[in-house]
Amino acid sequence: EAQVTQNPRYLITVTGKKLTVTCSQNMNHEYMSWYRQDPGLGLRQIYYSMNVEVTDKGDVPEGYKVSRKEKRNFPLILESPSPNQTSLYFCASSPGQDLYNSPLHFGNGTRLTVT
Amino acid sequence: SQKIEQNSEALNIQEGKTATLTCNYTNYSPAYLQWYRQDPGRGPVFLLLIRENEKEKRKERLKVTFDTTLKQSLFHITASQPADSATYLCALRSTGFQKLVFGTGTRLLVSP
Image (cartoon, rainbow over all chains, first blue to last red; front, side, top):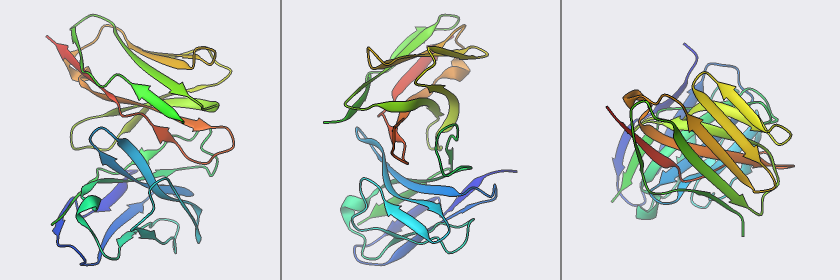
């Protein structure tokens, strides 16, 4: 089944403890992206990747890192999480580098709580 | 500043009626606009895409219009069913930019 898989689905951690949220897609998509979703603010893009070894900042990149060493994987790294990073995170992928005619396929989300 | 606005109040309608959701934008020149459906605790799911040179797009009971003069897209669900209850998000990509920007979504509740 074609899908975007995120892990874990739920994560509770403490301030300053490094964590990684994994994302993997099995559709051979070139474009991948991370969003966070907060009440009243909607989905905001954190980072995106046009292809392997190519990443770029979205609208809210502060406090996050990403890497794209393989086409299928796009992990989100929080080096020193803070409570304001408590949110619902979504990974998404798309077949083309050009988002024209290429809708996003989303994972089922990771709910992160930082205490 | 750039904005994408969707009605934050939930839309309540009766089964069988047509639901109409609105997406307004300012200070964007979108190449196209997309609509997604999101169920609680799940990722958004793509529904329809409409390009800047298209006025209307249909898919089964769904219809999307795109008015670049009014800077507005309307999303219609005809013969609505309780299973259509969800949050609907619009998203647009501005010409020259490789990212989608999302509205905050409108929750639709269809009563039997």
